[in-house]
Image 1 (cartoon, rainbow, N blue to C red):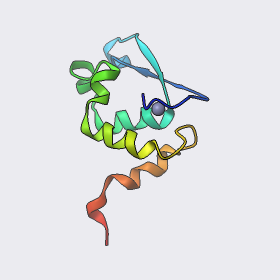
Image 2 (tube, rainbow, N blue to C red):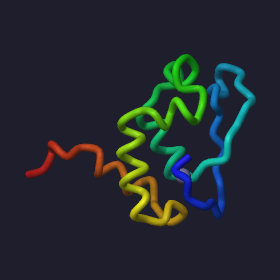
Image 3 (cartoon, rainbow, N blue to C red):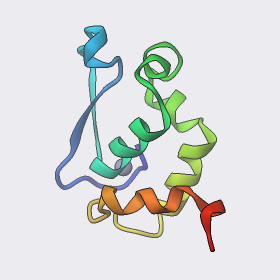
Image 4 (cartoon, protein in one colour):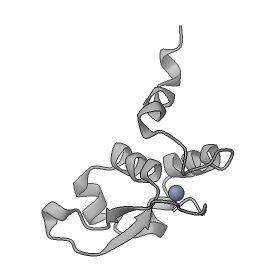
Length: 90
Ligand SMILES: [Zn+2]
């Protein structure tokens, strides 16, 4: 999704598994986590069932920009969650 090379790609279901979707794409783990932190399964099913649609979302564009300065294969998804709340700064 972000355009970087993939060591160990994850599988993303374009239509969520619960909705009996079977089409998958290979993406980075961190990209995958990001997608699911932004979109609900319903949104993925209805409006974001292509990589192009996902990439057009402003939060994803911000993420791709942020990620472009890093190695997407090495980003630990659990460490990204802190980045989501800039307003919480003390
Ligand atoms: Zn990626």
